[in-house]
Length: 340
Image (cartoon, rainbow, N blue to C red; front, side, top):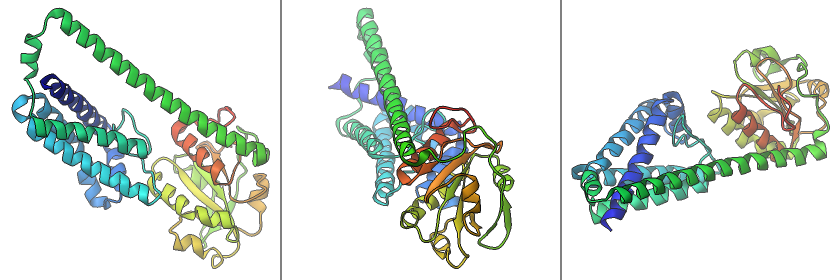
């Protein structure tokens, strides 16, 4: 049992050290992730810095036997906070980017994230309840060279297995996104402009009456997702909370603009839901030049102003387009594999 507790200490120390270093390498992303979980912007800036420093302090504390038990209690508290924040987001139908390992690895928080944090919290509780186990140097000195080599090889094999499992999970997720987008494309995605062609230029009024062009949107330095919607479209109305969430949580990585029809009064639902960048066409003139045949539909335009994806229709096709845009960043690839 003493060896098992020591192994848990080392495991937690590695996890917290990796998380702390990853977040420090991307402080802006760390602060954004904290804000995405509902923390006020001013507090998020402070917590986004203190959190990785606390994780590194916990990692160091777990390594040394005299401080390991206190560090384990601190780890359990931090993990409990993570679990509560993720559970709250999931209960509201949100999956913000957890930014768990900062620049090293990040993904939308989901049930798997809850399970992982729960397992780590259980490990911290075992250390806090049972005791610290032996000191690392004492444990090493009590082992023969052959035993240490065997342990080292076991650790490498475990690390390789975990890395392979991570790659497999990511690959399956990407394949699933492509499958959904292609399936939707087989139904309605035959419409739309060829990927790689120059996106048609337009100029429309927003809800305040200001004129906005496609160039105004691309000059923000991020890929643009054009959402074609209508105030009389039921599926469009159902998507409004999702669009608002994307605009709030992804504003540093994507520009999401809504092209609707009708008058500002008829589009009051967008205002009520807090959706931004709502542009109004008189009829369907902009939708027509993008070969849009129904709403809701979406297409991605690259920073250079080129069509960067096939047309996605309905939420089951639009959401994979958004995820693919996030994964590819500036070098967007279409759902059919054509580079923008």
